[in-house]
Image (cartoon, rainbow, N blue to C red; front, side, top):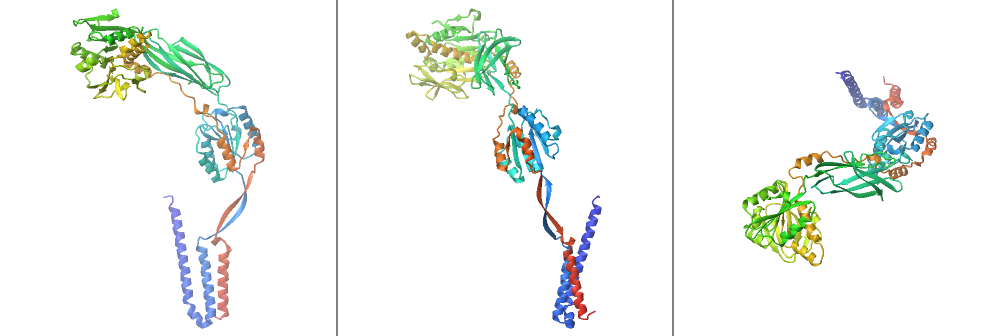
Amino acid sequence: MTNLPFASETLERVNSQMLLWALLVFAAIFSVARFKPLQKHVGIGQAVAVLALRLIAVAAAALLLTPVSILSTRTVHQPARIAILVDASKSTNTPARRDVVKNLKQTLQRRSVLIWEFSDNLRPVLLPNLSEAAEGNASRLSAAIRTVIASTQPDELLVITDGQDTEPQTDRQLLEELRKVKTRISVVLLPTNLPPNLRLAISPTQATLFAGESVSFAVKVEGYRLHGKTTVQLRVWEARRLVSQATLKIVNGVAQTNVTLTPDRAGWHRYHFEVLPAPNEVWTEDNSAEAVVWQAPTKLRVLLATGQPNFEFKLAKQAIEEEPNFEWVAVSSLPNGTRYQQGSPKLFPASLQKLDPFHVVAIIAPTPDQFGVAEGRAVWQFAQNGGGLLVTLNELSVRSNGWRFFVPEPLKIAPLPAPANLRPEEGDLLGEKLTNLPATDAAWAVRLQRRAFWTALQFGNEPVLVWWQEGWGKVAILGLDGTWRWAMEAARKGEEPKIHRQFWQTLIRFLADPTKGRTDEIDKATSKLKTPSPPPPELTVEPNPDLLRELAKATGGQILQPHEVAAWASGLKWTKIVTVPTSQPLSQTPLPYLLLLLALTAEWWLIRRSGLP
């Protein structure tokens, strides 16, 4: 409703113009129609002259109705647009910046300039309010320059910064925008003030142990912007008790060490690693980290079972017995089938159907006449509930399919040629722990037909030692009947059976889980760990003034020292000559009116001269 008067006015103007155009068209037609009668009285020459003058008058009147304008230019003096962009991020908080701000306030106090401060955001400020202390947490330099150019299109832009850009943009876009608005950019490069920083990392951040075991943490301290040779203090706390400390020397920005900790009781242990701050360090949220360790209430308990003892059983039992953090029971049979037990008395009597006290069950080369179906089911359920199960093979167990009692999964077993040169599988959790294994005389390729498995040892491209996750536990099939030869060969040379011992101890420890039955508690504890928080970009991104140098060179600007601000201001042209285009409607000039007047006067004179009324 508010636009109604304006619409009515416009309609009246259009109607008036249409009426005038109609009158002009009528005048032109009438003049042409009058040509022949006029010719009879004054002759053709004078009639043509009168008609021409009449049409010129009509054309002059028509010019008054057309929107034609006359274009022209004029020059005016305007104040130059001077903009100053000041970095207010923490990295520029130096005495040089404070001096530059003081010089600006003194030099430009009577000048009209546009001033912005930028850090994580861009804000216009008045010259007296320009801050001398820089406290910003970011330095969005490229974004600030683009915003100032787009909003004000300054003739001169002075950027006062150390060149740090926490969100850099492409140089080409920035240069194109500067050239488009014809802005000349000059730069005052400030010294930077990035503080030193130490960053702590530990691995692993969680571990599970049996009683008597220790855990080794790899500790890495990275130092940034440290001056000279630097040593740092590393401390490890459990609650308020200092359990370890060391002095580390940082070389080429890195210090590394291993910290071995042995929990003194069963249950959870939360360790707090910290490195004391370096001189002048600002950010300390990455100077500490936490790790949790679960220690089982008992040592690793192994049940080793076979039919009649063979070399593999006897020497495997010896390797397990020599590990001080293992508690074990070995079950074997006499020739008449009577079973007898050896090992830790507190674990007697042991049974394959009551396996709760144990963490790993190792079955050496089972055959159907040595074990029953009930025992096989109990062992399989034990693995699914979190225990570790190892089944080894020999010629008799392969031919008799004795493994089926303990591993109901369908297997495909094929003999391999001797000697079998074993290769640990890279990238496998178990294979990476097995190295430098000698060849063996008897080996079988083992493949699962219905589920995925991991290969720890290979002969050629055939899996020999495989394992998989079964429920909460692990199951491994060892297709070897020759590890006992490794111990015999070492004895023949008068050496300790290190390889054989390490192989069996590693395999048993891999299958054992100290947290058997406590998985939910493990997840709950690790979710509350404190992890190092990296510093903000403002404290880590190194300044790069190369972009600013390129922009200044490309736009004809200068690279200034902090003390040259006053000289730069005095050398500026504070006014500029601008050519302004102007336009004037033809109806507002005297030309059409003069033409109309001359045409009508000349026509009247010719008519009167001819004696016509």
